[in-house]
Amino acid sequence: MPNDFNQQVIEEFRANSGEVGGHFEGARLLLLTTTGARSGERHTTPVGYYHDGDGTVLVIASAGGAPKHPDWFHNLVAHPHVTVETGVFTYDAKAEVLRGGARDAAFARAVEADSGWAEYQARTSRVIPVVALHEIASGGPPNVNASSMSEYVKAIHDAFRRELTLIRGEFDQAGSTLGAQPRINCLTFCQGLHNHHTGEDIAMFPFLADRHPELEPALDRLREEHERIAVLIAELQQVIGMDSADTEHVRAEVERLTTALEAHLTYEEEQLIPVLDVPNESVHREADPTR
Image (cartoon, rainbow, N blue to C red; front, side):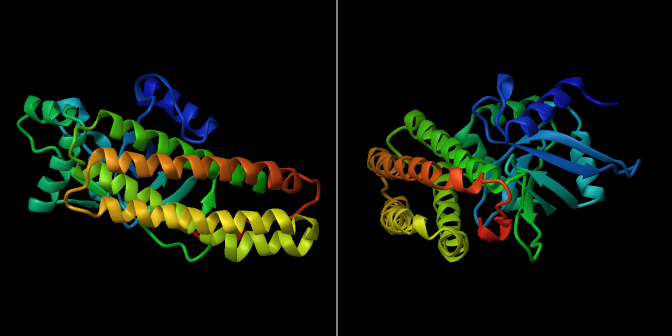
C-alpha cells in the first residue's frame, strides 16, 4: 500500500532536484527503488544515506528501531539490483548487505555522526543492517535529471552548493577532533568537484569554444579558476588526511574553497547559461562525462 508521507517526499524531491523540507530538511537523502521480494513490483522509498568513498553510499535499515526490517531491505536482499536517484543523477546500483566488522565499523561511523542511530539500535533486538549501494557503470554519459544543458549545469552547481553547506554545518557541530564521516564526506566532495571540472575542461569548454569564439576569454578565466580550485582541493585533502587534523584548521580550508568555488560557479552561470539557453543550440550531455 502506498505511503502518503513517502509519496509527498518523493514528489517534492523530484520537483526540486533532491531538495526537500520538513523532516528531511538539511539531510542527505536519496530515492531508492527496489523490486518487491514477493510482488516483483517496483517500489520507491526516500532514505537517508552516508558517503562511503569511491562513489559508494551507505543506507541503514533502521525502520526507526522497529522490531522488523523495513520492506525495502527485504526487497533488495531478494533483488540486489536497485535504482538510486540523487536529485541530479539517476543510476543503477548493486546492493551489498555489510557483514561482521565491515557492518560494525560503518554503523559506528554513522553513530558518531548522529547518535540517533544508537537510539534506534537500543530499541530493538535485531542488528540494524547497513547496506552499501555500489553504482553499476553504464558505459555512457551520466543520466542527469534535466531537460536542457542549462538546467543540467545549474542542477549540478546547486548540488555542490548544498553538499558544501552540509559539510560546513557538520564542522560547526563538531568538537576539536575531526570525525571519520566528515572526513569521508569532504573527500567525496573534493573528488566529485575534481571530476566535474575535468569533464568541463575536456568536453564542454572545447565544445562551446568551437561554436562561440566570443566566449574564449570567459572560458580561459574558467580554466584558470579550475586550476586555482584544484590547488585548494589538494590542500584540503592534505589537511583531512592528517591523523591529527584539527577541526578549526579543516574548517578554514573549507571556507577558502567555499569562497573561491561560489565565485566560480556564479561567474560560470552568468557567462554560459545565456548561451546554453539560446534556441536551437544543441549542447549534449556528453559535455560532462564524469561526476
